[in-house]
Length: 194
Image (cartoon, rainbow, N blue to C red):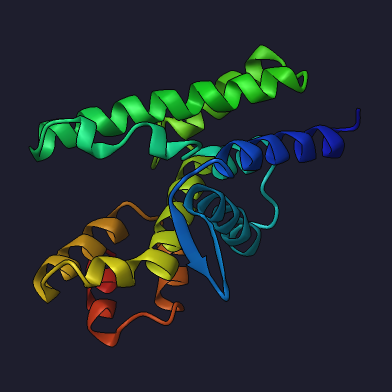
């Protein structure tokens, strides 16, 4: 199988797993499984933000939240410690699931370890691919999910969330965020992170 064929097979397997998400989200005139839609949005933003991205980064981006509904936040205690435990456990699970799908398509151990490391976000700010994955995740959040957060937060809370998100981004990522059609009152939250 060619590299492109193998990549297409893994992305399709990730989509297949995510298509089982029972949570549906509106996408234009259709309702789609939320996890499937998220993974596809991640790949779309990666293609726009870093069209030169390599095969392993493309896999990590598509699969970073694979089957997220299987590990709900509500299974963990409230508060920061519970949140951090949930995030850590979820990242381990996502990395493991994507590696299982990669193994089924014949990827070697080094490639799977690299993708797992990216999904676990082990070297943000030090590893260009890990930072790109984080930038893409932040851009997807700002582009597609910030408005649903706005419905449940005060303006000050939303400002702090966007500012915290922007601090995780690279300068290139923040420049891309400033090009998004965000509410004007959130622009200073991104600018403050520079």
